Length: 120
Image 1 (cartoon, rainbow, N blue to C red):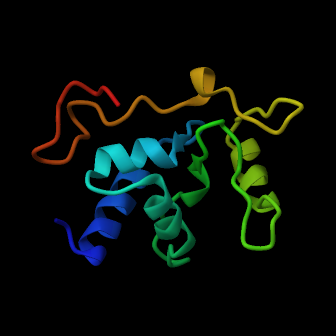
Image 2: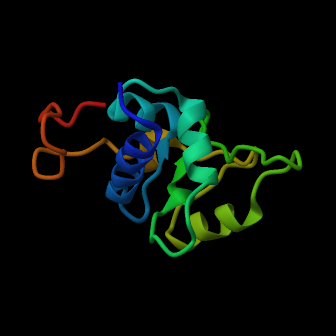
């Protein structure tokens, strides 16, 4: 089993692979990271050091929405960053994952030991 620091490093490495104009879900990142759940990815995104260059804003919930924060409201800055990358939201505040979802790491971007088929 991965240690917490190692797991967060894996999560951060995966999130860095999500290109501008695309989003991944918490569950998708969790499946790719292995041995963790979507909630763990959420905790990792909430813990991102500001100077690390990790595009935390590209991780959304399974409905394509911005998850609410501890104050019970979605992060407006996250939406603004996504919109600045060309991502569109529907009237309910959701992203079409078929249109803007990331397909996962491809053969050239997959970390060592991961499947090379790009399937998420």
